[in-house]
Image (tube, rainbow, N blue to C red):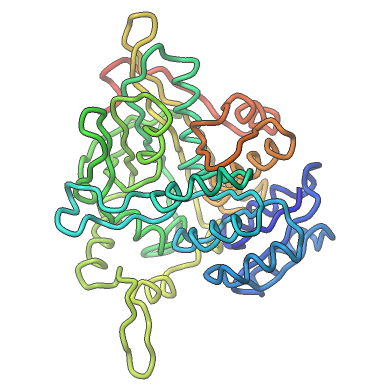
Length: 408
């Protein structure tokens, strides 16, 4: 397979490294707006001749099409901020090649009732192009990172093999991880962090459909496995809530993240003074978006891998009925930050996110996953994916939960 990887940041570097040496990879073009970063990742993979580094503006669709055609790639792997999803997604369709991303097109809050009604939902702009993609005969696999991605496959596995009837599919992210030495730092792009955390969170109930609520609402202490125990999680906008009900018959779906009280207060303050805005303002003789200023002032997640300690746990809490009795399980992936740093030289969240599209590309290249048009993880068979995780020694597990005891 010949791949155009757009974006060589924290996750892009992980994708490049984890693809190296895999028999399915014939060629990978490392493309980034910052050529030096792409060249750095090229050096990290040992200047492997199958890799090359080029400069590319992910916001210029025509340039993406031209590069994809010139390099004769089979697939575009989107590893940049979700604000660039649509030009890359549309470019892949125009170039007539397959497409993968780890986050779907952005939402827009409802203009009048943002904390009750859905405006433009996550992924809506992409799903609007379903007929065009189906007619192209090519595959566009959306949301196949860690979460969304593996969490969705966990939901599919539960519905397929563990339950007779699924009631709830609820993603819960937490653990005991921290970044040492910084007053404020994020484990992934601060731009995306602000987008997810300050947008109205999306919820789903079968009788009501999709609806929204206040940011950081619904606080609960979810009891995480591996000895971590109860950690407070809050509602955050995330793709799983938009994706899972599209393919699986569930009564409810939600996403909650363990952010911490201090982190939440910092984000609220950024919002109060307008530093989360993406609209440019004039400062002296220059125009700059406040959110870009915050991004410039916070540590690059790519550079903090050695300062991350503890464990990151990402999983899906599924409730329902099996053999006439209530059942609850938590399917999850756990990664130790220092172990990942020692073994791979990668920041743990970048590694957690990056291994999933690498495995997806392998399954597509080998023909284990086949589809035409727009597809989501819930529509794919989870067994080959989980089997490949086992083969490569990537942790995943399941814990049984006594019904009603998932939260403390």
